[in-house]
Length: 456
Image 1 (tube, rainbow, N blue to C red):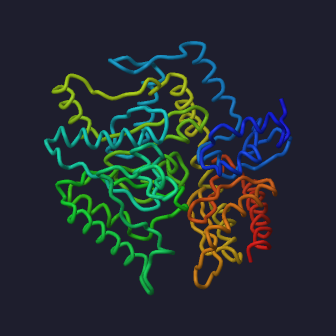
Image 2: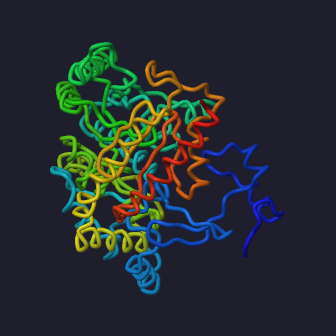
Image 3: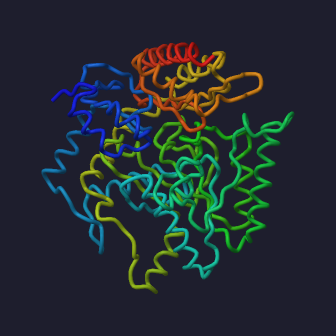
């Protein structure tokens, strides 16, 4: 059924709660209703075609219609539509996915625990950190550090790590034992004359100071995205992760890499951790694990951590955590097929072939009068909007500059994402061609031009 944008039927839909929506505006206008997709394109119920420049929500790596993924889901639904993974139970899709995922994971990650989303992966990782330290006889070593502008989901625990006002103000977050350190944004945070290396050194020293002030025997883990996604697509300054990891090792603090957006080729390597020389003790992933086709995520841990889990569960009688749908056989079958496609069709090779064009066109927007900084790696980019390029002055919040650029880009037929930092996120499906990259940035550029007429 087709709904006119302001029809009663569409207005009724508006009464559902939609995430990251101005609910008052949403009630008045109603939602955009999407009906179908193909490749990097989607169509709404009015027949309008859009190039999906954010891969849905950083996730639809293989495009919006892949017959192999549809077949994998259908065949598993017909064979065994559900089984849980509690009490030593498993299914072949779950077992094969575990083996495949660990085979491509950075060393020394050795075990996988399946969940239903990135947020569940983060919450589980926090619990794992606490469980691990209890098993090591360190009950006070429980504090978790994340970075300002980092994004780690919006559950009570994950939202506490997500150190952005819109995810915390009004929600009584963060909870206890969550700490926040500096944002590694060289554009906004560097002092005059400070090099990237010196900026990274200062941030690492600040992290070291924070841990020492809190007490190293109370700080358990550091959670970080290799590239900070929703915080503005912030790529780390030179030397940052090398210096940070030295601080963490000094104080026996675990590094949990949040690869929910970065993983599976987005940065030009299979993992963002590989792109930036990170050796994680734990890693979370989701999104592109199934190309977004079905909900699934995972937490991977080292064998050293797993062995502590084994001994701790012996004491307690059971490893007392899990989810009804964790490792769901249909989701696992689709995720397994996704990983096979990445390998068989050399998706990573394709990303490496087209990402120079993507980065060229992305950085071509740096000269636009609305653009303060462009940053990106692989097939992900962020464009920060400013009122004054020379002073880096931002527009007043009420001007909603990023939202306006997003709206103008949508009128041109391309979907991107306005981010809380007055930035635009660009993250197309990994299968995008060079011609489609040109189309994306041609349309996005016209969106910037149209927004500039109203903002400047």
